[in-house]
Image (cartoon, rainbow, N blue to C red; front, side, top):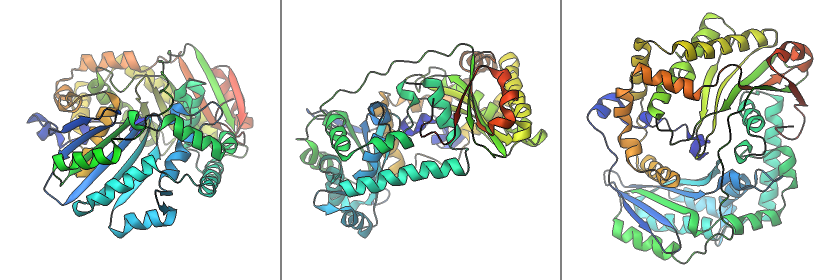
Length: 465
């Protein structure tokens, strides 16, 4: 979830469609065990196929990156796959591949996640590899340098090509500033270049340990025997040396301000317009999901219909909700030709004002409900999907009602409820943060009307001034 899977977590889309929701679909029961050292196991026996899905979450992630060294958690996650225990990088990969398994690690805003799937007969190997990754990673200096240099080069390549993935990175960095949610999960050119092997080792000792580990398994196994095996593998592991940081909620930004990221010669402008939004446990998330679906969360949304289909200003427009443990961001994200930058942005702003003033019709709301409740393919059918969902709920401190009650909440949402959520979450046009990536010489004067401009070059090795 980008935060945990960026928390898109549409939730309703995770289940078996509107019919199943109307029949009261609920998550299956699990075995939950918490060891004295803080490790939590969550297990669900699912015997229909001889597979085991595993998801391990280490709470922390990019919000624990030291100042000036963002991307450290991402480097660590990448290195967890590059050798552990008695296996070097190649041997570790071969051990997984030889049995047809999968095991991969990634960093997110508030967690490092390891996901995998193995045949049930290879459960012992799965636990061995997972325990080695967590407790005995090689953290090889040469592998770290290769990964760090690759990450820097990927960022530079993105700046030279399609800027769409970078607009939200610049957007959240400018919105949140020094707040942990302004952290670029994969780091930036400047911060990555400063990270040493000693930093990596220190980070592992400081922020990786039993007290923040969740292991979720779903599949073909005996729960009691699996708990014994996991306890033997993880029961003696040490806690992390430093506590997780307390992340305070960021205040909604007042007024307007603009970040102009200059890329000379760019033929298109990429824009991100937003403000501080809500957290994953926002109480009216069903109504918010409906509103966001209709505004810019599907191909037939208002933003796509007006900016792409009718005006022909872009190929893509969306409304983006980042919902981590504290208030994240809410934004409009799109791009257009350089000479239509202001036209597209003005139209997007007019649509934001329109939904705040008018909401959506009853027919549109019904369409949004059906879209959410009817999403396929199911996201909670396989063992791996179930393991992931249980781990995420545990990491976020949420119980099964977060899923079980969602369908009824979507089905029962009224137009008035959706309208009130729009007013509550989507910012008014005079309280917005603008980030525009494009040819500053050609658009600087025009975009100045949106607010005071801060300008940086695309070649700057960081994502905020």
